[in-house]
Amino acid sequence: MSRMINVALPKGRLGKNVYAMLEQAEYECPELLEDNRKLIFENKEKNIRYFWAKPTDVTIYVERGAADIGIAGKDILLEYDPDVYELLDLNMGKCRMAVAAPEGYHEDPESTLRVATKFPNIARDFYGKESRDIDIINLHGSIELAPIVGLSDVIVDIVETGTTLRENHLEVIEDVVPISARFIANKASFRFKTAEIEAIRDALADCVARKAQEKGE
Ligand code: PRP
Image 1 (cartoon, rainbow, N blue to C red):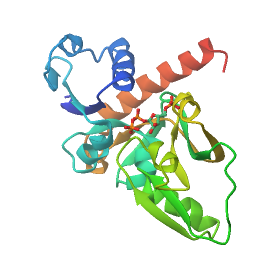
Image 2: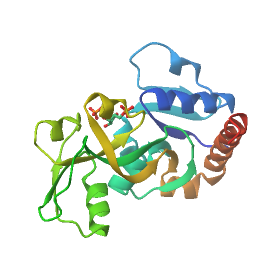
Image 3: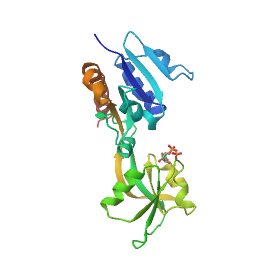
Image 4: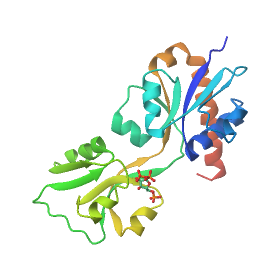
């Protein structure tokens, strides 16, 4: 007998794209795409329940077992290091974590580098490897503002299209790590619902492979 699987999807475009793959794989739940403010949807026949979570919270639902599986960015996994299994790279939501600074910026290696970021652990880890003295300024959004108004020297942040940097006269000075969306599972759920979770992972892996082939990757 197949058991109910709880899936935490990140609210927004990435979550909708992943749901579209799951729908193709016959894990559909038609109500989910209706224009309403509901957060939780269930298809009893298919034994699947979806909920929309804030993207940065998906790992919390999965780590604590409120969701059996979920979709989270590698940035969140690196920053919070949740105790979950990472089962598949979805090859979606691709961007990079990078260090950026005002155009023409010259670093003074003698002074402590002021780094504004939403990702203090990733930044600390990156500069730790370079043995660089830094002062982390932990912000929660609009990170690009910090070096413009003199709050920081550089930022460590997500760069997707590069538009935000360009429009604020900032530029990438170093790449930190490439980012993409990952399929994750709660460890105990994976032990007790192995077949169900593996079936979903395999269906997603097929979709990812097909998409890559179509794109000629
Ligand atoms: C993210 C990120 C950058 C921007 C990068 O911010 O922190 O600011 O997107 O995208 P781009 O390279 O395509 O311009 P988000 O929109 O999540 O808002 P926030 O700055 O308030 O966190």
